[in-house]
Length: 223
Ligand code: BMP
Image 1 (tube, rainbow, N blue to C red):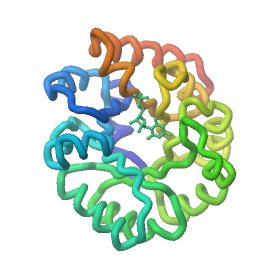
Image 2 (image 1 turned 30 degrees about the horizontal axis):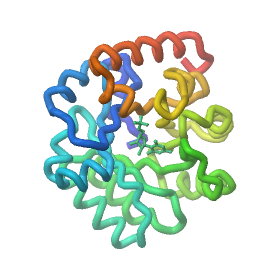
Image 3 (image 1 turned 90 degrees about the vertical axis):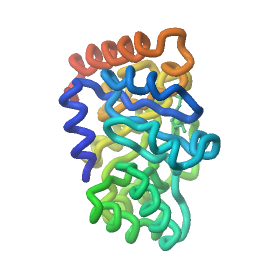
């Protein structure tokens, strides 16, 4: 809870890098990347392509199911239960009032985390216009972390002033944010998918990203 296991893994590996896997990839590669990667975020495209059981097996130390859940409470609870039963440690949901009371309680009873989408990397005006409202609902129901696009540096800084909740930030490299920038602004983790998995040497790329993140972090006021 409050991503405490993920934080522990992060300290052990001295890494704040989460790998986004949205398409089929060789599991040996994911294992080789796990020296640098603290969690694997499994996306819906992968689940659709290879099925939930196989997708769940793509994770390593800490498995995040990124289904951006946004249904009525009893369906949300069903989905969370199903995902936890398959071995996921965390589920990503939209923080829409009043859909998360039951599923978050369920996740916490099982020792799992729930992360809420607050600000998207591509610019989602409806979310950005309601940041305070979404955040206060998330805090009220016990959300464990927030997604804020790495491309939204100012917003990360702003939310960091409002809450200590862990922030995970996608949108690095392929969507324009340089590695380490979100961490410098107060995020706790950066999510990278294509820039690693479609590179010529994914392990070397992941290592370079982690090295860059450590360097930026060591010079930031949030370290
Ligand atoms: P990539 O590093 O290949 O751009 O992948 C980014 C990942 O982060 C994708 O899995 C995407 O679903 C996710 N993501 C995002 O890009 N922006 C958001 O605002 C929220 C996300 O979950």
